[in-house]
Amino acid sequence: MNNVDIKKTGEKYCMNVFNRLPIAMVRGEGSYVFDADGNKYLDFVAGIAVNVLGHAHPAVAQAISEQAHQLIHASNLYWLEPQVQLAQQLVENSDFDKVFFGNSGAEANEGAVKLARRYAVYKEHPERKTVITMKNSFHGRTLLTLTATGQDKMHLGFEPLAPGFKYAQYNNLNSVLAALDDETCAIMLEPVQGEGGVYPADKEFLRALRQLCDERDILLIYDEVQTGIGRTGKLFAYQNSGVCPDIITLAKALGGGMPLGAFMAKDRVAQAFKPGDHGSTFGGNPVACAAGLAVLHEMLAKDVPAQAAATGAYIKERLNEMIAKYSCLLEVRGEGLLLGLQLSIPGADIVKKCLERGLLINCTAGTVLRFIPPLNISRKEADEFLQILTDVLTEVCA
Ligand SMILES: *Cc1c(COP(=O)(O)O)cnc(C)c1O
Image (cartoon, rainbow, N blue to C red):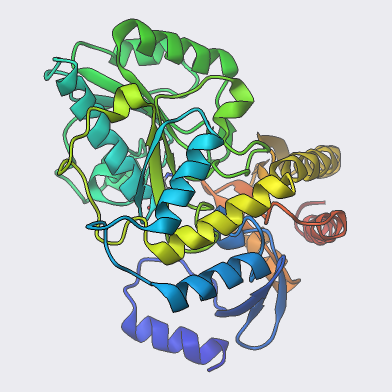
């Protein structure tokens, strides 16, 4: 089928919840992806910060294929070698001791909230049920993570929301203190707000939250679903600030494109869970974990996070130069290859014009162009991106 036929069929049979662009993706190779009509695009979306090693990476594809021939699924009634190996790799390369695997970011965040509430009970504070999250955050689309998401527009029409959440202003300690009370069990935030428009947390804010949590024996949870696995120039974004949370959640990049989520905790927290407290039929699936192992191996062997830091710094510098030239550009934000370009105008038209010129970018929060390419993009590909963006900006807002 071609682009038009796939779109028509999709409109007839798929629920109408996504604002999809009018093309269908059929193949990918490195930093490029091809639609059903054979058009080629430089991919600065990477499946929404998922394809960290680009498309069809040979090591990832081979790991998936070999594991699929070996064992696709057996459930968590048994030990699974790829799952325990990936858990070991994640623990040995982080400050955490135990891992739980699920299938998505929302599921990882739900699990983290369950663990935080169970930890409070374990520490004989059953009254502590509330999680403080940040305004403008994004934590997922299930009812609980939708509630955790501090954006009214996403709540509208889905009430009653899940109880047990309070909201504070990001990077504003006083606002967190105002939300804090004897029922608080955890503070949850993204080290860089991704969907909300690419806003990094201040280091002092994170340090203050850490201190607050330590004083009260409540938990600091980082939602690293978007920032995790190299995106911000370190394997985990918490390593940029030196402020380590008690629980970290992962998903997007973790499975190299396979659906895989996880949360990790230190032993003193993880021990609050007992057999039967949490579970998942597909979680830690052998094929997804084999892909995750291949990603992590490549990431560490080639120091891909350092590549992301270097390429990100280069692009950020060029974008900052463009701000002086184009009246519609206000600010560049972000770390590594999670970059946001704040516009003074809506971004949808720029996204469309880039698409027409063979570049995929994404607009979030209405007026922020978000750049989240594969982490191993070359300097030449970065320059190609900058050229197309420059051409489009010249047309739209010179
Ligand atoms: C994408 C995202 C989620 C939700 O992940 P899903 O896999 O879509 O459930 C949660 N938190 C953050 C920070 C994200 O970027």
